[in-house]
Length: 136
Image 1: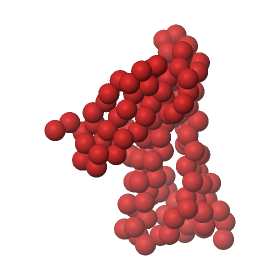
Image 2 (image 1 turned 90 degrees about the vertical axis):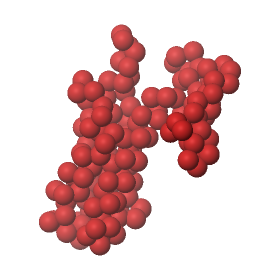
Image 3 (image 1 turned 180 degrees about the vertical axis):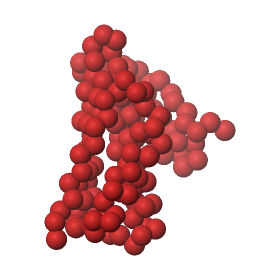
Image 4 (image 1 turned 45 degrees about the horizontal axis):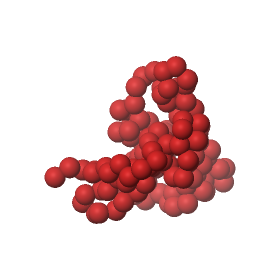
């Protein structure tokens, strides 16, 4: 069984179904590439995958060390190149909701950087990560 099945609908819009859960999401070409921009573009999903993967791996670390990171916010700013059209940069900002002990800050950074999506992206894609740890 495939992990995801994609059906092209029309007007540069696709429906992607996660086979295990049957959850469906739609993608649409962005307005700057002949689309209507009605939903995530495929490259937007790459940005979403990166941010949610980082948050998940940090969550695994936090759970293991009994840290409360609920409410953590991750933003990913995607920048495209023109020729060839591809993702040129994914700039991630991670903001923790409350103070984290100093001894856990570097491991949380490493957790974010070790997420499988981050490791799967081309080396040519700029992938800076900024962390905001509130002070006590």
